[in-house]
Length: 204
Image 1 (cartoon, rainbow, N blue to C red):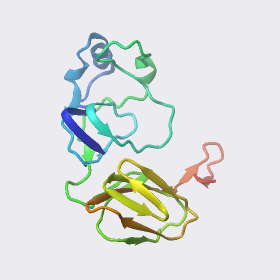
Image 2: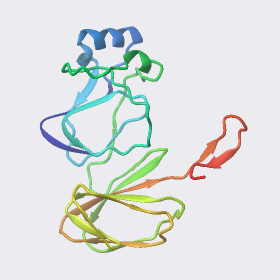
Image 3: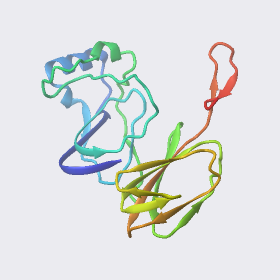
């Protein structure tokens, strides 16, 4: 989800299908911008970045929602910083196909689903009681505008709070007009043991 500045630009994926050879050459000779799918993001809009999709940003304040992973590869530096790059190591994982960018609807109250989690925008104009339909996963609330009280905790703009799975019901109460929250629910799903083929809950 993005908040933009005058020079804001977001890159998600490629403009077209490219070969590994072309991508490697462009990353090394500085012409990779020519195939990256750059666009001006909209404030408050959410964008879905699938695993293995190249991405970059400038002039944007972002809230990134992701599962924990140590697989993060730096492919290119627009300014020489001396930081380590991982171009060769990333080639087995990069999606080199072009494609459309999936994004949230422009209207208020949108919901965006992924296989791992669901994100819902909530315009909190009145107190709201929340009773989780699936009491087997935690919730995360992020205040993106205004302020709210969640249970006994105040939540200000830019702050987040985690509601444990053990909490059966709770209240969201606006403390300022125009308050907007993001609700993130991590959907439990079975994991298949690659050795035995058995399914187990990801929470176990």
